Length: 400
Ligand SMILES: [Zn+2]
Image (tube, rainbow, N blue to C red):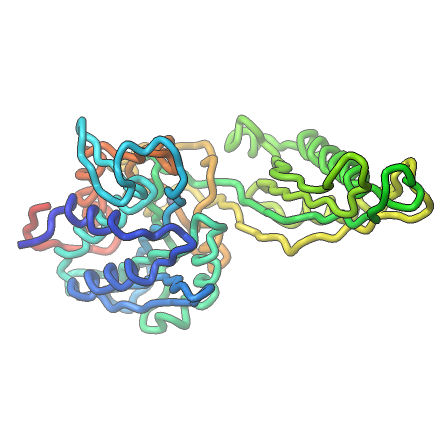
């Protein structure tokens, strides 16, 4: 007997795939399932601190152009230490018409839906290839997809890489074309420590860090001033790159001159702009800064920058065949998404992504993360419908 969608979701939820804990085991599980359904599979894997971080690529169908990629991520955000859970996050619980568990919305429910839809495909019916891509490390900067995108053609030379991707992130079945990117980096101000009664013998790293923060704020103001109409449509709340100083650390005691101050900063660049533009504006702008502290002597602080982690934004064209297929069962949004996806990384490989999936964004990353049973159970039919339209798929009689 075939495993039900709910049981399959349970099998995925039971596996702890918090980003840092790896996706090796769940990738083996998903690849084995798809292999049983007639898919060819390949694992793209790295070992990070002894942990397997694995992307799964599985495909079926002829070596024709115009296929489809369907993608999701296998990792989840952490649950350890997250207050508010009423049940074991790794145990699937059903209550009040909802299914609860870490990752059920973001986004193991969608992965389970794909597996259920895929198992009844008649491979010989496909007129173009179907490729599933399930990634690792999405929740920590889309690192899995970023590593995978450039090598994808060499990993599956048997078929042309489809140019369209459907990413099933939780949007409550609304189709999104665009999102901002994220750039994250550290700034370290190196001063000179000493006794606070002798300020001229030191350089106060925190005081100088204050000037760096003012610089960041002035870059933010410049970006607010140059917002464009196109971006106002996509990101009406903030049609410009937004900056966030996330943490600042420095100093030991009020009678000691702090010798170091570390600032952790991220910003969200607009799609279609150079994601490193604001980074360069901040770093170059420092050349004009006075890096003395007022009571200090002639010495100045040094400022160094960490390597920025860059997740690209997304602005996919509208009116694609994928959009037409999705809109039969989903509404098409015209605004941008507030979060990042693997779509930005896929775009660097010439793949156009649309974001549309089951479950509400408001559930993602929350304690007692849940999805309605209806939203979960509607998925396989939706996926089959898209595969009929885009890949010519015919399905065996099935019960989900
Ligand atoms: Zn997600």
